[in-house]
Length: 449
Image (tube, rainbow, N blue to C red; front, side, top):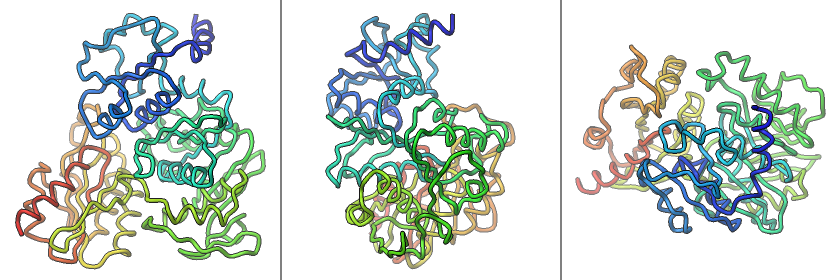
């Protein structure tokens, strides 16, 4: 029965002109919605709340429901649901085995079958690197399709249907092993680090999953050898590399200089931090392997504005700068803190919202270590992202010498306003609704002038 169902689902992709996306307000699903809408299909969807993303989709003629009971099954519609979405709580539940109700990984499996697919994966940096690579291609007049879970000022939501192009640049997500369902021609791997262990159980399982995806890549493989896990990985096929090591195919000499085939090139970018410089070099090399010269990539990089919520500058008030970032893993937090400490003067205040109880439990000590690198850090309550609380796991566990626990985000603007002075920097960071806090801090500071 399951084999028959899979065969049925393989045939559904070309049947439908109407698409309904469940969880359409998420960054990953919204980019699919935009891609499908631009391809000429009628796209609708459901999300639990109005947001910047749902507003942007509605401007692109995507109709969105916000009431769960408004979702109704139709035989003429292809339903695509997020892996984080519980379909059993909808009116679709009696039809959940129907061939026109598929998960995001199933959709991406079908989408990538007949295209030239360039994927970017890694525990950190995959969204911004996918956005950058998409920008490089488009700046060089190659109208490729792309799908990634982020928002940029050059294209808005990270989905685009490239008419008359068979190439697709795709962010390949390791969560729930989604990247294993993809048919990949070229692959860039930025790094491997401990994450999603609630799913993988062990770090070794996570690494094995990455290796399987790398080995199944059909053409070019590009690896970051500055990542210890990728450096020691033994593969059965040829791969290319970038890193600060001389043995790499393209070498990072310093924060501004790279070396390829004996020729030095200078990087000019608006992106802050050495981790972004590393991602830039990976994107340059993938573009090079697909026919775009290094010099042409460097010119386009000068004009790349970055991705929303990746060390995003929100504004200043009374000489105090406010940034926002999506980082929710200790490595990401430490890299962003280091980047801002190098880039700014004055003291750095960090406000962190942990994302999920499981991740907080897995990385308690590492979170403390990362947050302690700021002059002062504040932690607010955990954003559960659908998880049930774990007894004994709380943001209070992260409090320390220069890490203060404040239960509610509403209290943060007032607390900070009594501590910051002109020249200081505030960073809000996390994958939950903490992104709403930065503008509130700026407003509070403005009103206190």
